[in-house]
Image (cartoon, rainbow, N blue to C red):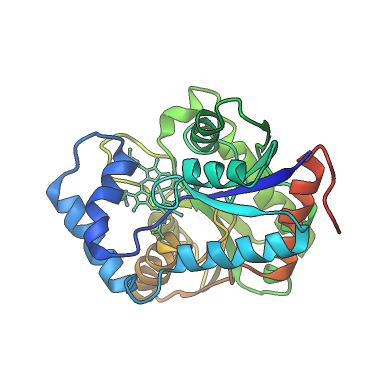
Amino acid sequence: MTTAVVLMAYGSPSRIEDVPAYYADIRGGRPIKPKLLEDLIARYKRLGIEESNPLNEITEATRAALEAELGLPVFTGMRHWTPRIAEAVESALAGGADEIVGLVLAPHYSGLSIERYRTQLVDAVGGRAELRFVERWGDEPGFVDLLAQRVDGTSAHVVFTAHSLPARILNERDPYRDELLETARLVAEAGGIEDWSFSFQSESATGEPWLGPDILDHLEELAARGVEDVLVCPVGFVADHLEIRWDLDVEATEKAQQLGLRLNRIELPNADPTFVSVLAGLVRRHAAVPSRG
Ligand code: FEC
């Protein structure tokens, strides 16, 4: 069998002019309030994406390192921007792949997240190759250890975070929140952290309730409890993109300053070689024919 990997990530516009089309893709055709679009453009401007786009650059570095480690072709496929998941699949097939391993750079399963990546991948493959899909990996020991090392030894209160989702997923028995809490518990245990909590971040203004507590409210609760020092450990993201650089490094940091809290965050896994080895292990276990290494 000839195996190729499709490495999937959320996607990010690399030019300001692309933000409206990118946002429209995220909304899947549903209307966008002009004020929300303006806000998003302002966040991307402040992030300086035209000079350097963190999500796209880190994903490319991860892809290249994974390809080198596996000795297999790895193609990037973005869910909401280019290169699209379908383009990655076409490149894999053009290179002769008859087995495709799909891996998302997001560890926890939700019908609103991983399942959407899978649908795009399945539709793109259209039965033209064997498909193996890594559905979840939030409890992968190497990933847990990597995060544990980044919180180990801190005397700060550790707040684990992840992207929020609409609260209705709980009625749908979606495992997302439970999987996040399990990763947080495993990391705290491995890092010897007793003083920790969990909060969500990056809620969207869609007009429906989202899972909470939101980190900004949570910081208020922590300050009211007398906590002075906070270390944020995102468990649901693996790269320094908009949701980290804006929602944590700007918004949460400003909130902490107002509350008189010290706030730091861990370095995300990004393209760290240890993290790339974790990803390589996941691919090897899912591929029918183990690759080199
Ligand atoms: O750096 C970048 O340019 C992109 C950063 C980015 C990542 C990301 C990850 C996740 N999202 C998830 C769920 C939702 C749901 C909605 C939603 C909306 C947005 C918007 C932007 C955005 N997300 Fe995102 N997300 C990133 C960026 N996300 C921009 C639109 C503006 C805004 O709301 O701020 C709501 C969709 C709707 O309106 O119907 C739901 C989840 C993840 C983590 C898993 C993953 O990475 O795939 C879950 C990175």
